[in-house]
Image 1 (spheres, one colour):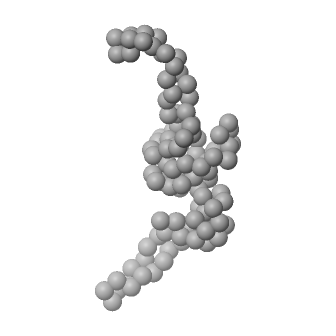
Image 2: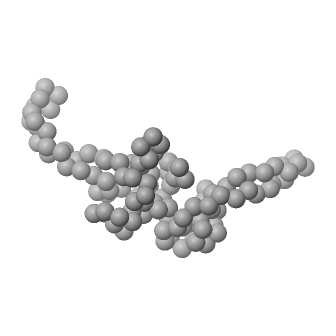
Image 3: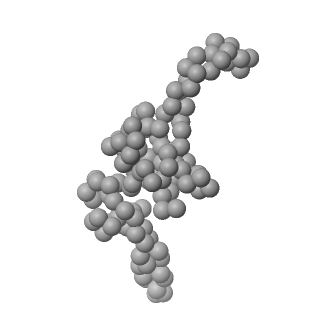
Amino acid sequence: MNLKKGDKVIIIAGADKGKQGTISKVLNKSERVVLDGEGLGKVKKHLKPSQANPDGGIVELDRPIHVSNVMIVDPKTKKPSRIGYKTITKKVKKQEVQEVVRFAKKSGEIIE
């Protein structure tokens, strides 16, 4: 999976299309992500009264969104972009070290 916790993403499909948020949880097995943000991926659930919740009522819950419905926000252009990988050689203490980094394909900017 190309997305990681803390990435800023934009929703490209569904009822919340066009809204932005940050990833708070990544579910690798089901290929879904949970987003932080006002009203992002929230679902209203009706609860019956129980010992834990004696009043019952309507509660908003965070629901995971499939990764195909979100794209990472390009740090330079602030628009949705795909993710690519490239290796960069760095000199650390007179030694060359290769590091694999993610970059936005739209602008070529490295994603931290």
